[in-house]
Image (tube, rainbow, N blue to C red; front, side, top):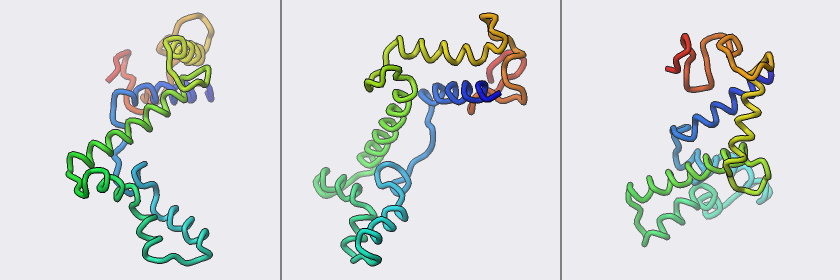
Length: 154
C-alpha cells in the first residue's frame, strides 16, 4: 500500500509540470518568504527587538529590489513576470530533484525512463509486466488532479 501511495505522489508531481501548482503572493512565495518566520529570525538575531529599518528590510527586501531594478517603478506586468518566473523556477527545481538519478542538476531521457520504470514497478502489484485496473488505487482518486472512472481519465 505504501508503494502505491508513493507511486501516485510521483505521478501527481509529473502532472504538476503542465499545470499551475498553486497561487503565489508576494508575502507567501519565494519573492519574500514567510514574514513571521523572517521577523522571528530578525528578533532572535537582534536579541529580542528590531528597529523600523530592520523591520522594513525583513518585510519586503525582495520587492524593494525589484522596484530598484526597474528604475524605481514596478508595473503590474513586471511584478507578474517576476512572480511567474520565481514560481516556475521552484517547480522546475522540484521536478528535476525528483527525476535526477545522477544528482547532477540535469534531467535526461534516461532519468525520466528510470523514474517511469520505478513507478510502473510499484503499480504492477502482481509483477506480471502489466498494470491492470484492479492494481490502481481504490476510492476513485488517481493522483491529485485526475480521477479514475471506468478506465478513462477525467
